[in-house]
Image (cartoon, rainbow, N blue to C red):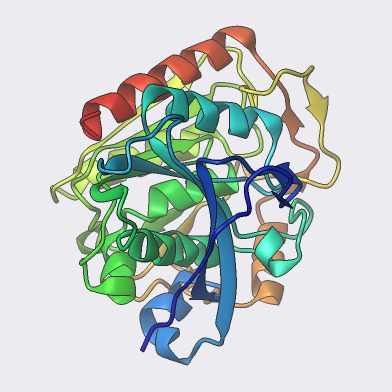
Length: 331
């Protein structure tokens, strides 16, 4: 049995997650869990300890209480929420979308996973995203049949792999699904293997990534897309690669080096239908614990990726994001 809690923000001086809350915002709390890997979602979800997770639901300004609005769930990266992420959400709100700012990091008292990638994982946040969608289905002003998901870096991975059907089926049996997925510079290093496991939702997926991204390389995403279409299963995915753009190209900042971050250029890990990552197709050693993940990254990753803004890519990304969700969420 699932128990959900709404926490309604007090208008005016209320603040949560370091943000002042306004009259069109609610803090929504729900039950999730802490699966380290996709395998734990698919094979052991019922035995995972419960984790309380919250987020900020924002309705369009001057919203009509008699209208159900399309929803966009936003997912932050390994550095948690940044100003550039919130600008996307503000844009969506001004267009007439409701947004949900998922607080997977703050809910677990974590601010960054840049150097480790273990305390808050893609699996945890995918589960959070679907539990949030289930909860928001009960909200009188949200149309979950027109719900999309977008995210950046780690959140991009969430936006991408939340379309993988074995995860969806394990979480809710396909009862709740996103109508559109917009991953922004996601890690694409996990690929379902063999090809019969390349079962993704037929909802549109579109990746936005920089040509010079050495944190999560564009090449891994193009390779994944090639494998998806080669499977001859129903697939609906595309990619835009921005020239001369690094990781976090939508920031308003100079390009700098993150000394603690991983460069994942050579990392590719097959993933079976149970969600288990393997070291390689030949060496089918499971990567299913924090220690094994660290050891696996030692075989292919380095430190010191670059990140920073590119004006042309940033403007193009905002424009594309607005057009993408307008089209597929039928605003």
